[in-house]
Length: 250
Image 1: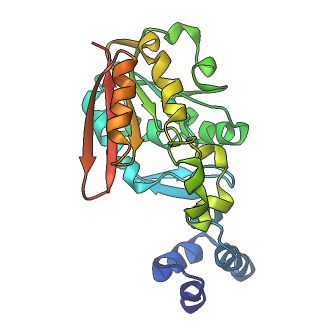
Image 2: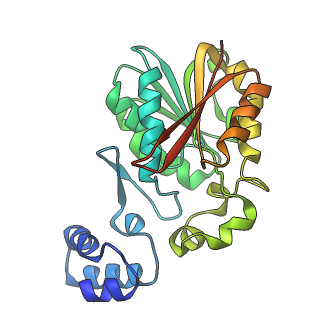
């Protein structure tokens, strides 16, 4: 099995083999799982979960796979979260970010929202068991109106891949994750502009929104937050090759 996975281009073939063996109920299912992996399906979709911030996040086919680099955004969010904080995971996908923040600060009030019904169904499996609420809709339209002006931490891990660069992504993402979870428009920051434009109306005084970008995009993203009336700062993690841009409502 390891040789088969390695021949298919799986860099961590030994680890993946262990995951598949642990997840399979019998030899026939294991064979099918290996065939799926060789065909390029993300291993997280095959085994039904992703490891994120030390947590097992349930994952369904067609839902964005949380990346390890985004653990940096979660770490930054935890520094801004206090007991009783209202935390919103916007464009939540599986709900991984909100669940991870809740794991570090269990006394928050958590909301999550996404446009995609498949993602919403998946997020409910992760968020509702810990007492959070998941709603469906386009950006802020999905949120309860009562949250307007009261959000302390807005997790906004929106798509940021420039449209012309999607073709160069690994096949796992390009072929098996919805393009709506990847495509950030011409410069990768189109959706961020939409979120930032309304953020100050939804954030509480002193509240912050956090978004992930590339290192090259970060200065432009910071300027977008400034134009939206937020005070920006950029944080990075060399270990995770991650860049998080934070905008705070003064």
